[in-house]
Image 1 (tube, rainbow, N blue to C red):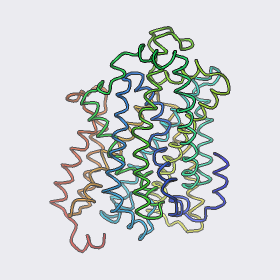
Image 2: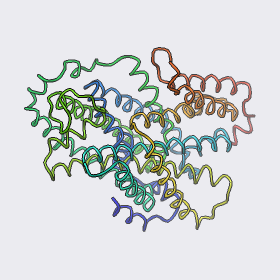
Image 3: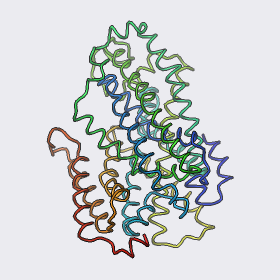
Image 4: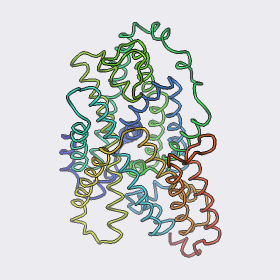
Amino acid sequence: MLGVGFFFMRQNKTPEDYYVGGRSMSSWHVGLSVVATDVGGGFSIALGGLGFTMGLSGSWMLFTGLIGAWLSAVLLIPKIKQLSTDFRILTFPQIFARHYGPNVALVAGIISGIGYLGFTSSQLLAGAKLTSSTFDTISMDQALITMGIIAVVYTVLGGLKAVIFTDTIQWIILLAGLIFIGIPMSVHALGGIDAVIAAADPQMLSLQNITWVQLVNWAITILPIWFVGMTLYQRIYACKNEKDAKKAWFIAGLFEYPIMAFLGVTMGLLAKIAMEQGMLDGVAAGASIDEETGLPLLLKSILPAGIMGLMLSAYFSAILSTADSCLMAASGNVVTDIIARFFHIEDRNNLRISMIVTFFLGAIALLLAMSMDNVLDLMLKSYAFMVSGLLVPVIGMIFWKKRSAIGALAAMIGGGTTTLLLQHPDISLPFGLDPNVFGIAVSALLFIIFTNTNPLPSHARETA
């Protein structure tokens, strides 16, 4: 992975090369990069945790990814792909600048940058959790530092081209590891497929072991990210044309569900059965453990040296594939949407500044990861922070004829603030719904009110 970063460092000449791959990437490379980024290491570990607690029904979480990918291919890509090419757009908030004005773009850049910084941290935490659960002599902090340095260095050096090419490699390694090593060897260790079916709780093999509230919470948090994710906008811009971008999104959706969804939860389900039978090293039969550590403990218990290394490389690849993309997104937001707003950056210095900012953001993400405990919780909070603030203005951009900077700002600030406040542990929400449901509702209400009362003049709309 470091070698890929060094290779593309020599090819990058401009910020356009660094942040959007020179707008020349193929649909298969981009499609695999999209799914690697969206489902990468955090969701790989988190899916194992869901399979451990819910069984196969945990796969429904990634069904929302399939729907989100295909909806954005149909609704979003035609709207922004040509615009990004015509105006040499590099980031998601720059789209807002053209529709709502520079102040809205600045706030969107801050929200997106903070969200992706948190998401980068969650990926590093996932890798550290896997490492420390597998290797007795490696602590969480040692694992975080090692993985963080590798991910940050090749991302800093190679930019988006390095990210996309390493994503493709990493995704192939993950699929091969799960299909040819993880699942078959786990099933064999448990006595074969018939023994697995006999030992599993029937509910764990059902696709109905889920409540409507869980489905709503996943949908409202994950599906909209396809409309507001900076990592995804960068890949739309990186495609050669609209047709290739749509093809990449259809490819990504199918790889998310059913392929990765069922591979991930199946590994978690097998870990649960192994624990119940007392097969996990150092864990008594029926003991209570962190659901996200069940999968690494299973691998540690059943795989021999060498094979274990191959399987770990698969998961480490998945983790790095998401961490690098999120770091690239946060860097793009900070450099293009925040720093460039207040300071003029000469073209000859832009690439160097981009690399420096990427390095420092990577260091901050690493420090943040050292203070967090739960991978899925950190990921979903990062998602929720961005979704509740940014989704409604994007939908308004696509479907709403009126435009209002005040309406967009009110929606972003009001929606994001509502979600953050409602995430307080002492607050109990109706039916157990996710705070994001209420954040998006508040955002939509504010957007409608302020857009209707403070629309941009017609000449300003035409300029935007």
